[in-house]
Length: 98
Image (cartoon, rainbow, N blue to C red):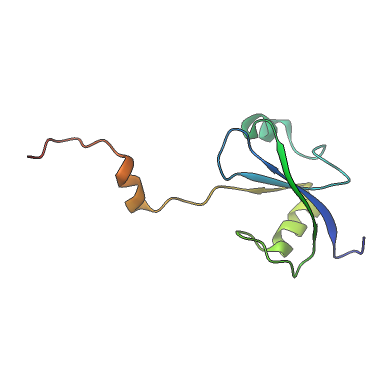
């Protein structure tokens, strides 16, 4: 691979919906801290791709992902923040209204 490209493997969390871990395919999960893996749950491989700075990703900048993998050994993509008004749909009403 050239210096600006990387063969990247993406894992989905078995515990948290929409949480993903990006790693260098050649290194695997060896650089990921044990504490993070414990909270992440069993990593489920979902995709392998060639990542370059100009690649379009859904919720992250490819250049940020590449930088994080090179510096820390991984990139953790957290689930999107829920809009406050959507959370109201799941709250239990605290007072009766008739």
